[in-house]
Length: 418
Image (cartoon, rainbow, N blue to C red; front, side, top):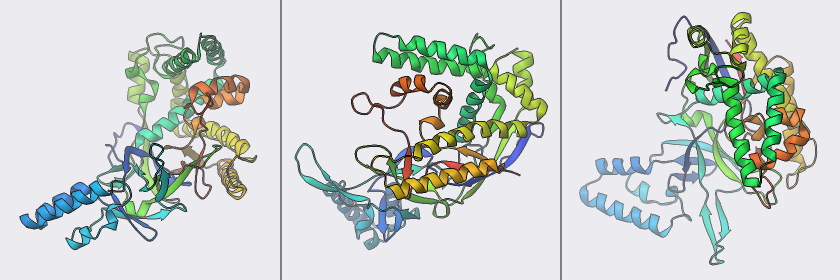
C-alpha cells in the first residue's frame, strides 16, 4: 500500500490534500465483525480477535489450563452461535485474556441483539447482528487511494459526457438499441455491456471512436491518489446503524464509520511522464486525453477542482429534490435533518470548498453516469433504472439512498488543498 507519507517523484505534479470527514463514511474491507468478535459495555463496542486470544492463551496458560479453556470456549460457541457475544462470557476475564484490539462508541438506537422469528420453525430467537468492518491497514483505519480515484473517475466521466455532444448522441442511441432486446434479462445484459464499452471509449480506447481499447493505456493512469495516513481505531471509528430509504420495513444494518470531523492526509498527483508516453509514444487520442491536455496546460489543481465541482453540485441538487418531499417510513424530523445537511453541503460548494463522496451506502447516482441521464434524459433514465440496480419486489428496483439513524447522508468528505 502507498500511504500519504510515501515520497513521490519530484518530477510529478503533486498536491498535498487534507481530507475532512463531513458525514459518516464507511469503506468496507469485505468482512463483518460477528458476535464472536465483539463485546458490549454500555455505549462502547469492544472488538476482539479470536485468533489473537487463542495465540495469547497458548503463550500464557499451562497445558492443562489451555485445554480446559479451549473446551469451554468451544462449548460456548456451539451452544450459543448467535444469541450471545464473546464479551458476555466471564471466560476471558477468568483466564486473564480479556484484551480487545480496540474500543469504539456505539452510536445506535436499536440494540445489536434483536428478536427474529425463524420462518422454518416459527420459533422466536434472539441474535446479535454482524457489523460491517471498516477497512484497515496494520489494524488502523485509512482512506484508500483507490476509493478516492474511483470517485474522481465517476466525476471525470460525468464531465466528459456533459461536454461532448458526440458521446451523448452515441450513448442515447446505444441505450435505445439495448431496450429493444427480446426480454428483460437480455436488456440487462446489453446495458451492462454498454457501461463497459462507454468506459473504454472514455478512458481506454486508442481514439474517440473506441478503437483498440486497452486498460494499460487508460488516460487516468496518469492521475493517482495515495492511500491516506493511518489512524487509531479508538480515535476515528464508531458504530452506526444504517437504513435503506423508501422500503416497506426499516431493516437496519450496522457498520463501522469514520467520525465526523476526522482528518486524514493524502497526495493527489499527475504524471507528465506517463502522459507524454500515452500521447507521444502510444498516440492515444480519446475524450479523457483531450481533457487531460487542458489540465496540463491550464493547471492540474484548477481543472481537478472544476471537474469535482461540476459533478457534486449536480448530485446534491438531485439529493435535495429527493429529500424535499415526504418519504415512506422515514420520520419527518429525520427527513428535514437530512435535507438541512444536504443544503449545508451545497453552501460549502458555493463557498468554493471541494467535496467528494466515497464509500459504500452512498447511492446509485454517486457511482455511475446515471446522474447524467437523470438530469438530461429523465424519461429514458426512468426506463432503464430497474435494470441497473438490484432487483426488489415485482421487478421494482431497491432504492439506493441510505442514511444513518440520526438522518445523516453518508460518505461526504471535504478536500482541503495545502
